[in-house]
Length: 177
Image 1 (cartoon, rainbow, N blue to C red):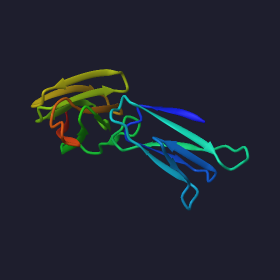
Image 2 (cartoon, rainbow, N blue to C red; image 1 turned 30 degrees about the horizontal axis):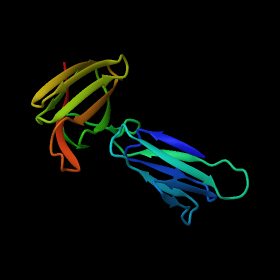
Image 3 (cartoon, rainbow, N blue to C red; image 1 turned 60 degrees about the vertical axis):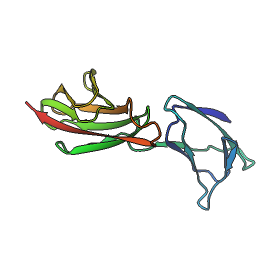
Image 4 (cartoon, one colour; image 1 turned 120 degrees about the vertical axis):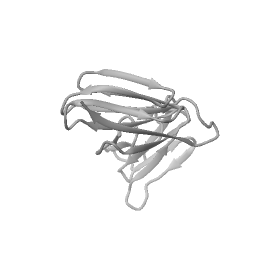
């Protein structure tokens, strides 16, 4: 069985069947002692695709469970921000993104402030799809929130050291009237 993982950037594919075998990038992965396989899927860009082949080596028909787990900070596994007012440093791959999620415990104006000149931070209020962006650091953006609103914060690097594996971007969240 062949399948494609779209945007397969920095995820791990888990298979929990001792009869399975996975082929990824000309390397074969077989079950460990517990009967499971974990294959690290890393591509050069979040827009790249990963091609995977799954083979049932057991000799009988069976249902095989596949689980795809994203690193914390990926779109489907964001880092949850519990507190406001603390500086947060995102280690962002060149031309990559890291995702944070915060839930408003009170109504007010969420302000995100950054002192880094190489970032692009987007706020998305999942309750009403209001989106605000800012770039070029040393700026702030403010978004109105109601109690219980969930905000997705996307931090991306639009410059920085192309030789570095990741680029740090520091930002702070505050909630005011």
